[in-house]
Picture (tube, helix red, strand yellow):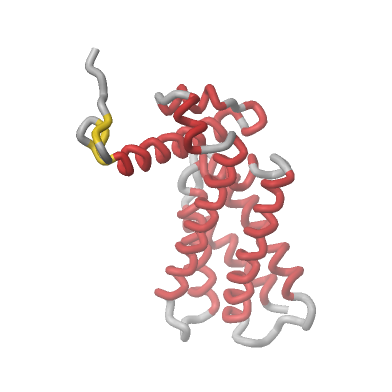
Length: 211
């Protein structure tokens, strides 16, 4: 059997940093698969390692446990989705009508989270009640989404039509409703056309935005 030998900052001819990034990426991908397939509560480090083809020793060199892996996955999914929505909004003209603005944000969010059923399952289902620390991260993520949605809602409403004091409640309601729809769409077989989902959410979102 050929032995891999570490020399300086290389390992079998490959930079150590590259191998570490690749290993971490494999654990993240396997965590996404296992958490979505088995459920976080029923998952194990062993199952994640088997899926990744790596050892538990290697796992604990990267993560303190399943919770740490779940949190990193969750934050990455959420941040990627927010970046996608923000980029879509930047690409949408400020002079665009509310329909175009809401459609752009909605489509970007669905594509980012709903496009991969595993991401939808982990970020919208498995993190709920997973642990006290995970709930703290969920609260933090909701605040960040609220800030972005506040911008979307105000711009779509063109500075009027929202009663004073209603915005935070409306944003919270929108977040919950959109996530339910996105999750159901992500796991449906067959999936309905994305345009149908965007159209339904548009009506709901504009209905909530306009008093």
